[in-house]
Image (cartoon, rainbow, N blue to C red):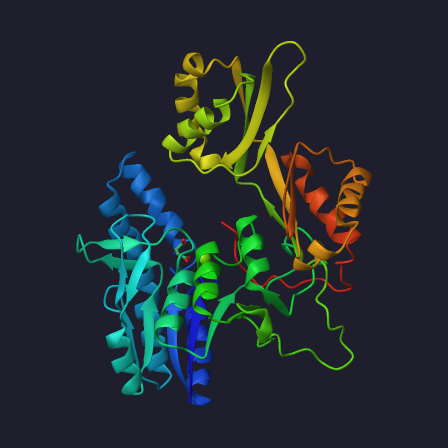
Length: 428
Ligand code: ASP
Ligand code: MG
């Protein structure tokens, strides 16, 4: 008998019909001879709606109460799903994160998992029940309070449970058939990827691909959990995210033995670009600036420093950071202007980031040329560049981002003949 963890996102359980459809799928999986643990997200846009509600009450909600509020979304979907499964003649029990033994640190809103002891889930399975667990939440042993793992955290709950229960596989259900070579909402001819390494998936998630939570991919790689990303709206085989490239066992006769050079194009509209103009070009100034930004709890992504303008002894430093962290970082930087001795700050949130990802690029020359040539032909001006062994990223104007994604996708031969199916989801 196999143990399967299935995670269903908000768009799969957005209404009663969706919940019944998911229940059917879960019951079928059990009937096929498997033990099943289900992790659910809140229905549809519930989490956003709860956030909006809190915003109408206060502009400075307490972090503890916010987690109490947000964790309620997953409780609604887990209990309704248990009822729907019971209605179909199977037995099920739902559990909150804390009942399922998801122990976290005490940092509200972005708690980290420190221990998973799913005793009650195991007992339910032994009884022949389907166990349903509320995603994205846990409890701090220290404070005894309910915590949440951060937006999109249900994927991480599923992987953590799969690892703790030593599950045979972890299926992440979403509203597209798997992971695509680009967001099918932007590139209609994107192709479904059959298999991708965790390493490449990590770069995709870190580069703005929203299909899997970055922490979920990290967790899966760390604990060697293979992920199967697929649609709850079809029975098509999805994408396997494999923690260890040696797990690549599915190469069929006639298929090339080497992996493709490029696995996909990711994009991100959530960052802003900050330029510090006229920074004294002497040792220590960059450290000083980034120390100030770190002190404002902001994560810097790309960095570019120009050579200093001749004779002035001054240079410009640009970097990107998450737009939501922009305000605090800017305030901290402005407050330090005299001490650091720079001339001015330019803040631009009309930027977009595009990343080309593929483990094969480290051994293939000419990838950068093809990439920049495609951008040039599409009339896309490049503002910033950064690279890793398996990624090239650029920042451009937000309005040009979709054009840039399509151009690069086509240039690397990733366009397929068919249009990708997007089953649902508002993308909110
Ligand atoms: N419901 C939470 C969110 O919207 C967690 C999740 O969907 O994974 O972020
Ligand atoms: Mg989600």
